[in-house]
Image (tube, rainbow, N blue to C red; front, side, top):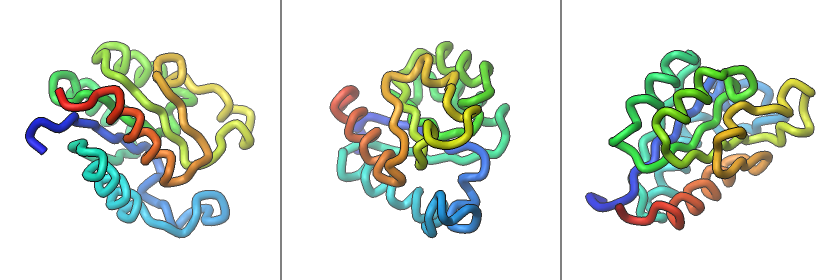
Length: 148
C-alpha cells in the first residue's frame, strides 16, 4: 500500500468506552472492534488508515495539525464538533478533505448536538449509521483521493 491514499481517522471523547457505555444508543461493539472494522475497510478500499482516539481536545488539534503533509484526508468523530472552534480552525489550517462521522443520529438527540462546527468545513457528514458510517466515509475518500 505504498502508493495508497492515507487517511487519518480521529475519534474523540468516550469512544474508547464503546460497548461499555450507553449500549442502547451505541451498541455492544467495543472500540477495538471499531478500529478493526475501520482498518479492514481501509484495506478493502486500498487506503492506508491510521486510527487514533483521544479524550482531549488539544491532542485532537495536535493530531490534525500533524496530518498536514502526512495524510490525504481526515475522518473525524468527536463530541467536540459541537463545541470546538479550535478543531474547526485546525481543520481549516491543514486544508485536507474532511468527513465528519457520528455513530448515532445526532439530529434526533439533544438540541445541543444539532449544530456542528466541523460540519461548517467538512465535505460530507454521515450520521446514524454506526460502524457503517466509517465505511461510507472511506468509500467516499477512496473515490475522491484515490492513489496520490
